Image (cartoon, rainbow, N blue to C red; front, side, top):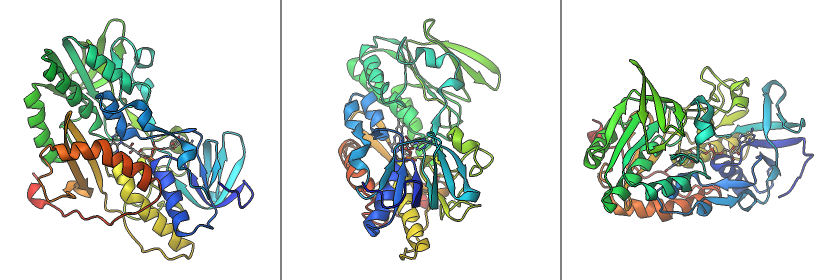
Length: 410
Ligand SMILES: Cc1cc2nc3c(=O)[nH]c(=O)nc-3n(C[C@H](O)[C@H](O)[C@H](O)COP(=O)(O)OP(=O)(O)OC[C@H]3O[C@@H](n4cnc5c(N)ncnc54)[C@H](O)[C@@H]3O)c2cc1C
């Protein structure tokens, strides 16, 4: 890592060194090694979050999902190891936790989203104990697998909060992997899915296919149910519904908390009504500040918040910045691509791919609603490899090859 200019000013400043931030930094420096790029990232560790579903299902170790941030920070980027606390776009600067200011010519906001654990009363007191777990935390995903293995029958509850959340399929992926384990072991489990929404998935064709998966397992679905309180020692969960509150007892509870834009973004001039960074959904340029871009989970774009989306977003931001800086850039636009590899059982995945407006765009000439072993192998081996070695290295290895399938729309 270098520091070509004073630490207080850089040509491109990137907030967040997660999937989105590192891929943009690496992509810019691949194109122009002498660009002055700084990444502001407080964490020593970088997580491959899509792997946490597999950790919870006993198909990957937690340590496989964690690498030192340093190993993936581009060599020529300046790493500012701090957290941004505020944005001052009128002065082209951000302020850090240390109190220092960093000025920029161009800013990229890629700070991910915030998990609102405390919005569920009693949850933080019991997470990781009393049978209460969540694959949404690195340290808790192994507990999901521990609970699944120790489960000897009874009520297993899996919850899904209001949208948007990152990887909207992850709440049910956890459920299928546990249900599959119990089925294989002959353990009789009452599995319940409590979903604040009205369907198994936001894209109707995939929702229909998932209804069949649910029916096959004999899972009980409860739509319009939002988890609002947990009592760990008493093993009860309280849900809010249109008809009031309802209480359920559990032997195992897998929780996915509500999610929102990070507080420091919510209270900044960069955010819109719902608190997310407001960018144009195709160019990813801020709607009010033309020298600011946003990508990844922290923006208001109506795509699925996934690493798969980042894979198609980062080349757009890299190309736009290169153009702004007078280095070319091909004017690429983001089409809303996102993907969700739904682990319907240990050994099979339904590879849901789609773009804006729920348009189904499979990368392979196969019916994407069918769970397949080949996609499981991709999820377990190929996708993590691509993440660590290709996406984080800012390599745009190919343009999309997917073809829309309007025949699958309903
Ligand atoms: C359980 C689970 C399963 C998932 N499954 C899949 C899947 O199968 N497929 C898929 O494509 N996606 C999946 N995802 C989603 C995927 O991980 C995210 O969409 C992706 O990581 C988003 O990238 P990002 O860079 O926007 O955010 P992140 O990768 O979360 O990175 C945000 C970064 O910003 C940093 N940051 C935060 N605050 C500040 C601050 N104040 N200042 C500076 N830096 C800050 C953080 O430390 C972090 O490094 C899953 C996620 C989870 C939790």
